[in-house]
Image 1 (cartoon, rainbow, N blue to C red):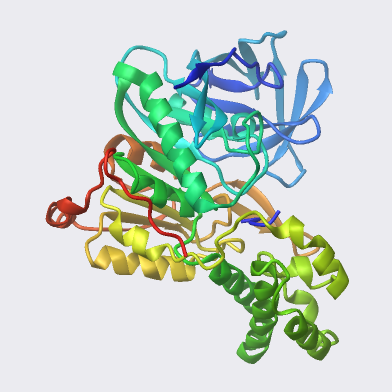
Image 2 (cartoon, rainbow, N blue to C red):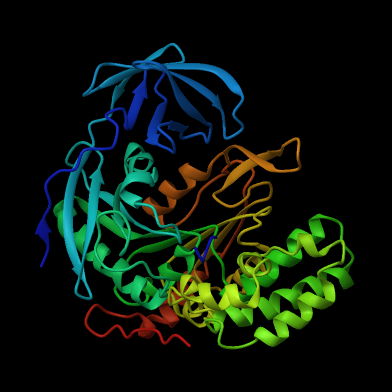
Length: 455
């Protein structure tokens, strides 16, 4: 999850490359072309297939399979910029004419930059507000769901969170502040969509999984979607990642426990801003640093401090301070959310291990909370499937089949119907309506919604 590391009009901002957009091919399939790193592009289809594009000649690109770097034989050519068409693997395609509105809006005195994308036409559509993860990048540039959802008839509102892209303010991991920003984005999306809006809700990936339920409690929406998020604390995330990584490497439970003890010492130092726990960290590192398994103690952020000397940790402590609520317990908020929630998790997710989160969500489902849990057994963080490379590394190959369709269906209906690839779906039965009716007095309103307290 990489945890550590009155509206005003905005002039239209062109994409960083004119090729970026979503195109309908002659066979009826849609292919999204998005920006990537180092001058490359990435294509994605609604079935989850994907590849990297590297320019071979002006206007001509060659594809490689997933994230593996292996050529897949697909060649892509674009019409001259500004392009409205392409040829993808021998099929002609035309850019879908999405209705795009750029905007600025204000949250807690900070100006944020956003974009509403609607399917063509005048029909009423649901709108999904895309909530940032922990990344520092511009969501307006890199969040491909802003195009994949409208291609399925669902609107999307994407915004650069504070301190990223063109938005103001400082980068933060303060979930309380980020939830208020998400609510401000939702209200702006509602305003811009106007009469075309049928339903509105959030989708948040990774760290956004902590933010979305908080935002859902602060102003009325129709649904909430969490992708590869967590129903445990930030500290628990690090502990669970250490355990899962060491278990997958075959270590015995007693060795795993020692790795988690090292993590606990590192977590205390990081959570305190290096004002507590330095002696204990030095002691446990001295005790175990020569053990053959020590090198495999990683976690989500424990690995950041383990190689550093005490002096280096103190000197760099400011770089770890983003206002992260390390001990925040999301369960009280999840228990209070009354709108339909969809949680999509990967069974092989190392960055946000899903086992305990799944157990907690299943308990809520058993208590008839309006939650749908979709677990893709072979997917990792980002909902991608993978193969193992020559050095034991994971190489993503594609997105889990059915994932993109699942997001759009839930935005339309607040429920899922049928199968979505290999997803194992657990949902509240029809009695969930009775649960919502019994708890209708707990539903918040725009006027009275309190801020959920953070520890």
